[in-house]
Amino acid sequence: MRILDVDNNSAIRKVILYLKIEEARELYSSIGMLLKECDYQNHSHVSDATYEHEVTVLLYDEHHMKSLNERSKRIILEDD
Image (tube, rainbow, N blue to C red; front, side):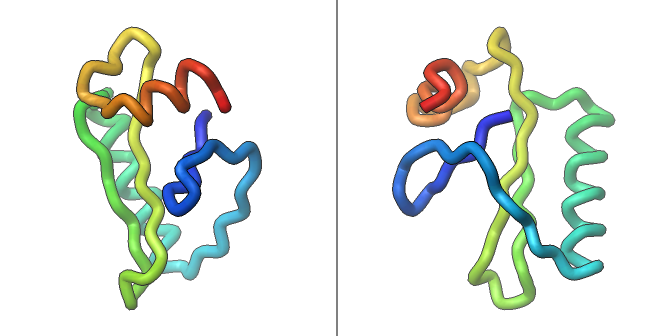
């Protein structure tokens, strides 16, 4: 697992998600779709009702990273 703080362009090690029921369902559904297809090429955005807060989820494998940008590859490989 890697977590990117997009605003500060750095990795973070721990995060707490405070989700409303609807947001949790959307996150669950998004992860389910990615897992069903074992899809390393796509990602999903889960936003709150105002689109002010967003979680982006994706699957990764160190051997399937060609679709990721360089920042993402660095976060995964260097874990910093």
